[in-house]
Image (tube, rainbow, N blue to C red; front, side, top):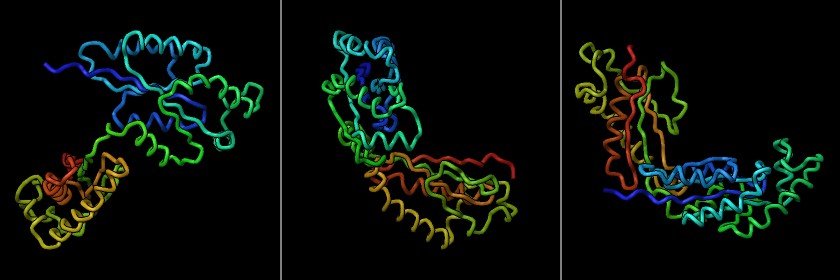
Length: 293
């Protein structure tokens, strides 16, 4: 019998406007169960929930900040309760200089949670003072003043999530029909309509790209083989860069007119070609295969 996963809690906190939303998104992308703006007194109960037998959630990221100011004074007690129960946790504290925070607030036109008199600088200074003791307890402090969103994500990945992120990329090859619109979730779109359409071959029309007769008709012609060679070369070239950017899922969409013949055959063939590609996992989806022409 497999042992239950050990619960480990990551607490994300820091100054308002310092990038906590992006931080929690980064943890979520890494497979964490995330909760934003949770009152501190709920922390022990949340730990109990995830410690129940049969619970498969082991990595939890929780955002606590000054938005819950009426509860924030209970934060220290909540941490002591985790320590008493032997539940490991780490604190990630995000901050930025005043000039950067003011610029970000002006860009979003949102009010600072502590600027009760309307003074943004006053709210920032009050918050920094309130959070000073928590900053001193933090395991990792990240100054986001001079980081764009991509740099901040990378710093969190390198400083906090190193060793936890997968070193593989999942490539999903999805067939679709242009007559039913482009797939919005696609990262790369390939157009297979340059190939002869099996729909106009009477014996092949009722079949799909899943059938050998259609697959052979589509794949075995020189222009299709050249297409596959160039696509596989491109994707093989891109895989290391996907991994470098921590992009763990890539959707490659292959389209034909109706999404039942050419695109299906090519998506299946590409999946087979990439099954043994180092660092790559493969899945296939046929969006419009069951639609009636």
